[in-house]
Amino acid sequence: MGSVLLRNTRSISGSGTTIFNFTTPTLTMQGTKDGLLRVSRGAESYWHSITNLDKSQDGMYPVVAFEGLSHSSWMDSTMLPSAVVNKDLKPEIVE
Image 1: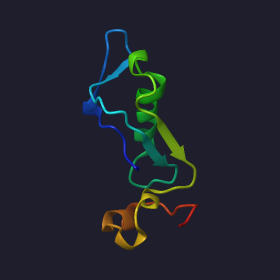
Image 2 (image 1 turned 60 degrees about the horizontal axis):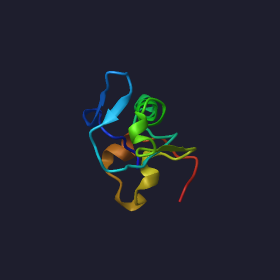
Image 3 (image 1 turned 90 degrees about the vertical axis):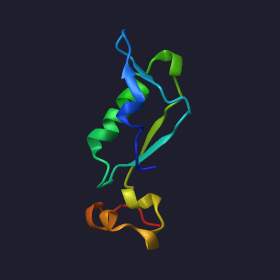
Image 4 (image 1 turned 45 degrees about the vertical axis):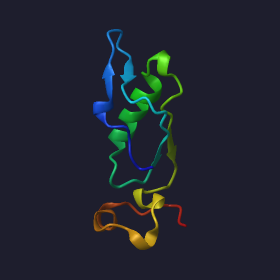
């Protein structure tokens, strides 16, 4: 939640498709108002996990974006780290 599979978990095959060397199926959930995870990282994650994924791993790494959620939307609001408080965007959806 509010993260992506890191770049070191994937490579590009000889045919140009993305292959993950991470064998655990992983759901990535992001908010469209995330102030800490750059939108470009979310788009990159979607491209590698959905659009360019090798057919042998089809469906193993779904990526979902939730409209209006921020990075802090995934956390207990009473325990937010200072980096989240200072840099996150205000969510459109509250608890």
